[in-house]
Length: 311
Image (cartoon, rainbow, N blue to C red; front, side, top):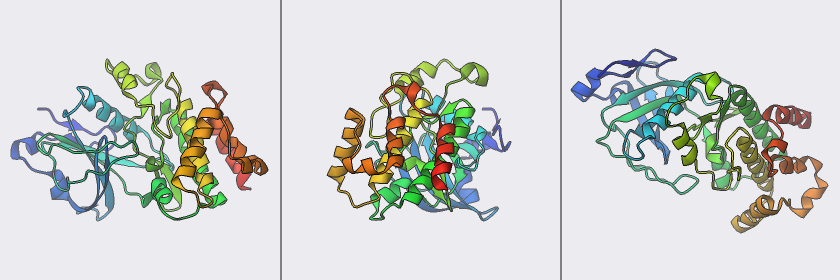
């Protein structure tokens, strides 16, 4: 087994000594604080480093217990996270591989699409150390808190700034949802790149034989997913449109059933609530969720529009 280093930090990702001695770098260098959640791609916990006394989020991902190309998906996420350095993107720190699942592992919470994460503790696990954020947009949606219009545009503007940077790098997220929008202080950031996809292969030189499998595996169903046949950055704009729509709906008390009906009317018939006719700015949602992806505005254009709305 060879020693592998992180392309950004040059920290050892795969250490043969750990596999020989069955040691855990996680338990040696960190104190686990609590479980943060789980999803289709792994378990996330908050940890405090014994070295710099800083708290981080650590994502634990089992390698090789599901699809044959799962490791390629994980490798893709690590590669992309290591290259994205931006104020509106959740920061990546480092990554390493261990021969088993160490620490907290009893999380079985469902994600937005009803998938649960149950890891086999005896399989090798990849550990991704990331910036620890305060909460998610999903937390707000699930609380009794009423959104304000300034907060809606603030969140939407931060997300557009992050998408503008990502799309300029030839990268789409592909899975924007409330659970993937994180609050870090006063800034809202894009994170969780489990389905992220590099679509400018030739320019990025990261294409591999499993790209077709990854594309076909993308689950483009769900509340925030675009109905597009082709996968490109326009799907992120569609998802952002649904996010903006839900945030505006959350500016007043609304039942779950009313929310479901309103989203169905928007996605199936392109209709906004009748009372929205008195709010021209809210009509922007219709531009983002157009059926033709080529007619949707770019993230850069939307960033400019939000700046005008904030003045």
